[in-house]
Length: 607
Ligand code: NOJ
View (tube, rainbow, N blue to C red):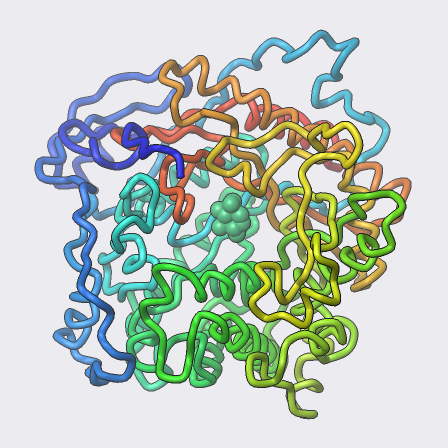
């Protein structure tokens, strides 16, 4: 693990906090902090300095072991909630607890000079200038509740697994928590205004289950403050011409459900999730067109087998079985939610967000590598998408490899509910790589559950098998174990997905890049010059245009991850994915080159 970089964490959130606000009047009405105004160069808005007094996100990770699952009683009173919060420990309060209303429009900075001479790389508007995006195409950006909201204990929210996980020793590289992060929970109006200034027309965000149901459970009380909050968020986005795209679950399981029965490793989660989904559908029906049940289920379920989640297993569950129990329960929860969506006559379209890629063989003449690609496709995407889009069941390759004692088999009824339970196909398409068979061969790996590559029995290669050239520029070292910029693979990748799991509509529900060493840059002119990320976006979008026009891919939107730097799970704040820089001392947002390039690209290509 790279050394801990504390500079960009929240550890310095002491003293002055600066917040982009519209007016000192708004400040007086909306905060209790003392303030002084100063002007900022990049917008016409006024920045207000806050004296935060005691605010700090310095954490002392708790080391108390997770109590045996089932030992905490279901007490849905305020003291019962405190009892669940006590598993998390002390939480840092945000520096203010109301939402400032921007009253001045955001002005974009003047465009930067071209990144390269235009004989080498066209400017964003000149990328395949005759290819216009289909009408209704979504110029989207994406966020997730845990990663951007902060205010983790405000307005009745219960704790989520990540509030707890971030405090476990050595779980987060820089020892940070997301107690405050971007404070998007209170700054969503400012964030929406800054999206609108770019011309963004869709924001894909997630709802925190524990804000709606602090205890998570179907028989527990609803938190009206949470429901009202997202209602305001949805309406405010529409008021600026930004379509809200809503994900019900982006990995932040209510911690109470883990304490009661082990969360997604128990089939009890199905009814609780469906109940939560129904509450949200009912509340926002007609105001949301595009819904997702789950974000990247494979990644979430895989996490459960590792630290720190492996310290909270229910009886009968262990690191080997937890991910597969989760696959099964999560898919049944998805199917149940979609069944309810349709039975309730909720308007709009619904699906879940896949991650990863099909891939291509590493060695040109290796039949085992060709087989490995099939295994990769089955284990990374088919495992969730075959049941939903093509067969109603796990891929055969998966069933041949993983015994029923690990991966439960579906009943006929479950298969019927699963098949067809999505209206479109969404892929978080960050990269596509080369796939190799295990060194000891696929057969030997398949028959040995202790093989490090079991059960998928393939490996991802980041360089060609001949001269050893990388597939593309590496991301920040914190993320380079999985991320290279690989635009040249996008068309093939989308074709493969469309052929294998056909639908009439596809979204690239997330894509984005961690600019190398960005968290170590100090000067703003170095931070905003995110050239590798800009190249990533522009080359991917050029390929996306060709996918639509030359390959007939029904792509109807792309969502850049992310509109702001944010809490990158176990990497904390040591990695930055934002098209806007966030100063975690002041909470001020600043556009990077990539934001302006995306804006220019879409303004020239949207119709
Ligand atoms: C996809 C996940 O959905 C998101 O939460 C994460 O931050 C990005 N990948 C970048 O790793």
